[in-house]
Length: 525
Image (tube, rainbow, N blue to C red; front, side, top):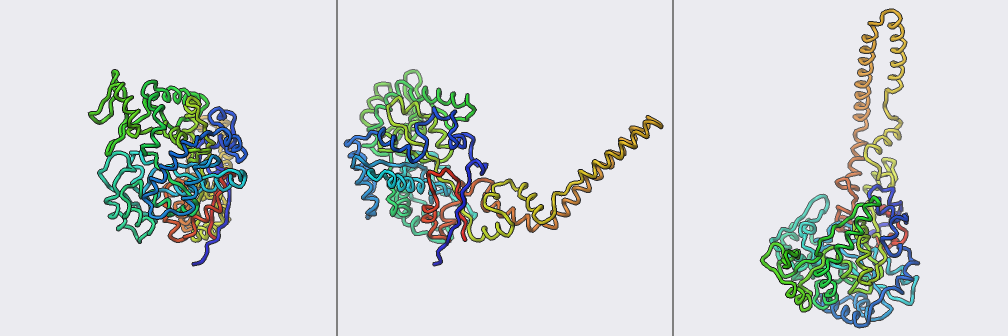
């Protein structure tokens, strides 16, 4: 098969118009945001991060055993993955983590972009700090219960959806029924077909998929829904139930961000924990001294729930406020890689980490990209556009194209000014002869102005009709690269590109630089 060569273009995130002011201020190292993170994501910052992060041999043993338990669902472990799991027992080994929900078929492209950012970060850190080992980790959001966010994906312009009546933590969902969705696809995709048909749970299936896609890069996937790992969370659970500690700290930080003009990404609950059992993941609330599990008949006294936390911490699930802390408690982690919204909500958590004396990781914005296949690249060049120009609004590009085809903007503004000047002279004449005629002059002037407006619209319409095909090509190109007006990475699926370009993932590995803080455009040549 012909190897697809790529032209790589980089541009500032701010220039895309697709990222929040909070993120662009962070990337420009605004002084206002510095109190909300530990170290800016430069490669040199990791020297101090390595010294700050503490992780004991006992914690490494627990982590290693849990990962070996979880990878028992994989028939034969890739030597690179096995090596990385074993390296976690060494005191000079650290992780670089990204996390995401268990979107079926990997969901939007940014799922893949996150993982590749983690892989490349580890490669660059190993080069910079050869005495240490760096392991890329994908944190599987197995305890999430928002199934509607993960049960669908888009492929070649068509939406596919998995319908199931299952409830609770999605990682525990049976894959039964997914074979019906597999049968609806335009062709068989071996990695996904095998994972969904041969895995018992969505958690196992997602591990199998990420293993198949990224095993050769040594990616380790971890499921926090594990009894031994959850023991590390017990002291946090106890404080959360009795002191509402994280709620106080996050609320305070969120208010500070708002005062600076930044919008908080998440809002804290008084208790940021869920009760977790098969088929159930519901919030815990405290009412009149009793701890209740919403949408159920389950309740506990204070002593009962604290006893439960000691004996069965696995029955507690952290929400978005406490999940990052849990992650940093059970991993020798140096950096978290997230999308724009994730980085912003981590800003809200720094005081929580300080209170528990846990090192706050380096916050890295995942690499973002737009992929322009050969067909769309050809259309772009025929229109005389560059990749960066495609980020401009459609009407602005349409105006630009009009100028390029030697037909500047159609406006009768100059003619309107001429008429205005002429009628001013007539008005002076009327004033000197019969002032009662001034109103009549004004009325005629308005009629003339209206006539010009109508003519201008007719001329624009005639011009647009003449170049309708060109503008339609532009519209189609914009829709292909910005589906529904958003970034491609937030809509399109991996298979929409990899089906035609099997080297897509290696191309991304070659193109992405986690530390250059630029948006990447990959153009097929």
